[in-house]
Image 1 (tube, rainbow, N blue to C red):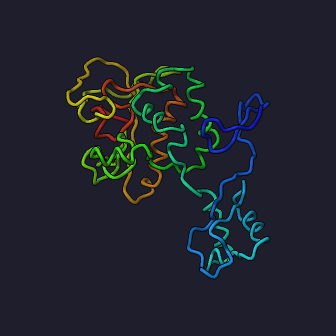
Image 2: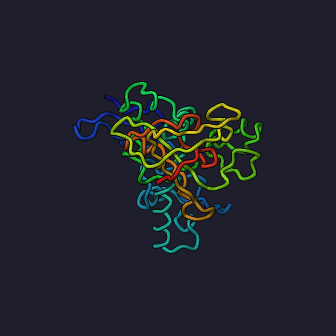
Image 3: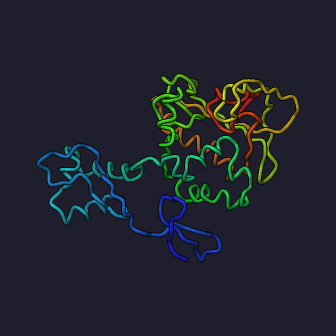
Length: 292
């Protein structure tokens, strides 16, 4: 049993001997570098552009690192007193960089398949516990202390501009580029609708009315048409909205993770309304009577 990181977790991990905790992150010093203060450093400063704090990010670690150099706190934080410096360092160490959405599962394809209601989790490829293991590790170890970015992917940076989705790398389910010719999330609202559960019975909280198939061609691969739903099949829909420039805007990536992947892990909810994505901007989703 060795520390390893075969699946793109934030740090190396290993299995534990604690029966109540199957695995945990290893206390391995990070090889990456961090810059605790991103303001420009004066040309005549003794401080380099990067200060590597190793595996611990706090004021004591920074002071210890500076004690062996000619760089000073005053140069890094000009015009700030001791209390202000301590507060700034604590804030920067708490959120030194947002967690990229793709880091959670590891690849664009996993994320896209999941949001469309497919992939290993929905198909039960290796069993629910194993298929959701990556998500569980993130929830158990990182979710509460992470600022999650809105999903962007290198794979979309060429595709989107060439196909009218704007000069960006957004997944088409969540394209928030207001200047995009098509696919943009004009209402600042996302909804997820589940129709199955891998755990307990699905809590039916809405009725699905209809879906314009042309609104989500990147998910259903259908150019046009309608689906009308008359049977009382169970569905559970949740959603959220945000205001540009407000706190809700900053945390919309966290809200997306909670409305989608967290619902699957915590409640077992899976499956998409036929012809619609499982999670997307509301413009691409079916018409329902309500969403929690």
